[in-house]
Image (cartoon, rainbow, N blue to C red; front, top):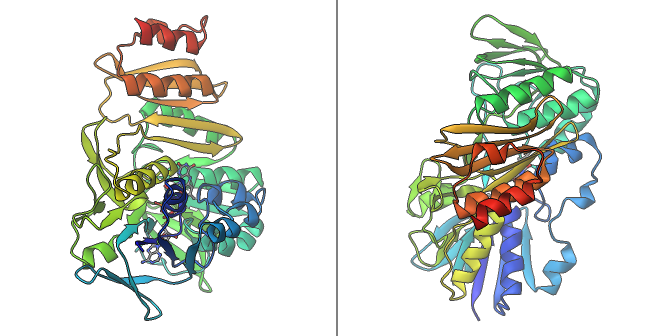
Length: 411
Ligand SMILES: Cc1cc2nc3c(=O)[nH]c(=O)nc-3n(C[C@H](O)[C@H](O)[C@H](O)COP(=O)(O)OP(=O)(O)OC[C@H]3O[C@@H](n4cnc5c(N)ncnc54)[C@H](O)[C@@H]3O)c2cc1C
């Protein structure tokens, strides 16, 4: 009987289980995760789970009974420690050796850690795992002054939750604007204005040099230009490091950003696939290699990997998309904006109902939509179809966006 072993406890691993069963795989499946809980959704960790609006029971992607019904052997709270590719065996932290026919590495990543003086003080937190959020919750509820290091999505979502609870919140961003890696300056400005209107102090060009402590606990954050920001809690959201060590030790091809996979989600060993945040892969739509940190990518790559493993010939070429929730507003992002030459704004940023479209050579390559679901849905089609668009039509608010999209698609 074919044995498929999945390493990971996130969206990619759970989707691999679902896809194996949907594709009527009848062999054995074992899932190993070093987290002691069922694979769960990570996005709420900086949103509704952090605020306490979503209970822990709602986090698992699949319930225990789904694994039981699917005959999946779960090994939770256990690390995969070594891949013996020649013998097709996986070694686990408890000494067990599992033979596999196919291995799926869905090992994701971990939060990048600060290394400056004070990095080991109590009261400095990261948000990657349920255990991280659980560990910070009691302190978070009590904290009055929160400093967030990093103006990316996780930092800004944490800031939004903290502001809703009435805390004094300061966001320190090293770059010249928040969200600088992913959005246009206009969108950064829009989000900075929203946070400031909500009472957050957002400071850019702030390179953190030290966390100052008192009695072993954080007391302030110091920056290169002499700034000192008092804090009784600090949350750092400064990026992700791929969990690619297992693959690297097994001498699979590994890029500094993640495990290299081909367009079938296969590593350099045909018996080993890798999916989700841990992969460094080629995106055909954008013609370049990338790592994506999104639920969409984890789910889509897991589907592709499973189908290929079961004998299909499926290429991963889906459009990346992402979302972020801040202050009850949904930001939906379609595509990747790098390389755009024209930014088109539809709607009113001040009213928090706006879509920003990124065009390159007259074709839409990405969109950031705030409270604009129709624009998000339409933009996904336009980006995928690569049809020419015009600024006049995109900004014509007298017509529904659906009608505008149909016009472009049928022109
Ligand atoms: C706070 C937060 C908010 C987010 N918000 C959004 C959002 O709004 N929208 C969105 O699209 N995405 C969001 N993301 C990103 C999204 O959660 C990730 O893209 C997604 O979780 C990736 O899934 P994955 O399965 O590839 O990896 P992960 O979720 O990282 O799972 C990897 C798993 O593998 C385990 N593991 C690693 N190594 C081993 C080993 N050797 N042995 C056993 N187990 C191992 C890890 O412990 C972990 O359980 C957010 C992420 C975070 C942290």
